[in-house]
Length: 293
Ligand code: G1P
Image 1 (cartoon, helix red, strand yellow):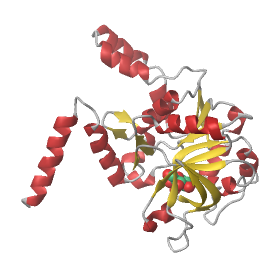
Image 2: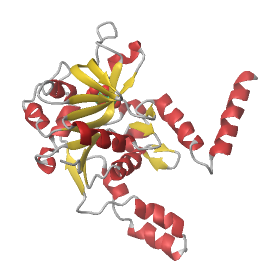
Image 3: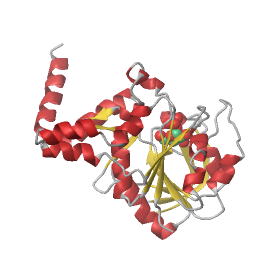
Image 4: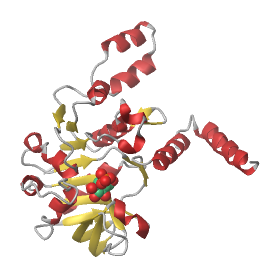
């Protein structure tokens, strides 16, 4: 069955970016000239996603605003004959029958956020995109996964190799057999201590899961921090059908982290023909200034 729906968990307070995120949702932080949210939506659109499910909080109206119509702004741009800006503003808009906004009442973790989407997802495989993981790639990461998933079926998570000391920030695989870009998953551990991590293969924010995950999430098993972890629920699906880690082509930027967001801005700037030379000059000037300090 094809993957038609994607869940975007976007309810967090984004405390790592305070005070920027006091009134601006983390997902609205920009990389060059687009918010993280929009990169995530565009990646889903390229992968053939038709229904977009945002699990948000009552304090984050900017998310729905960005994806909705903006008649005043559109009129202003249209009256001024600014066709390209008008197209860029209209390009952010999702049809109202394709966008679903659900409220996660309490911050009970990623697993709980995904569980909130169960009724809209129904009984079909679906994608999850965490917008603060940005992947710069010739073929968008989720498109690569959907193509691989058409062959494997089952459950799939995108994975990257991380330094051992970083395993405590990720869900980490106990890997089985590897074939091409696929790694069979024998176990998963959420944020293991580097000494106990079963590998250095970490999950990043792209998943394709079967709807049976909702049954596991519904059992509401809280971790030591009082959160329901997606990784824990996924563990219960191992052995019940194909479950693969997918090593995608491309470079992932952790935009949930200040340095990661800055690096993404430089990398995405360099990837744009019209900006490349100017961005390169700025980076070189900054490096020169450091040398002369
Ligand atoms: C979440 C997941 C973790 C995953 C990570 C990817 O953690 O719980 O398994 O590796 O996203 O970004 P968070 O970053 O929300 O702490």
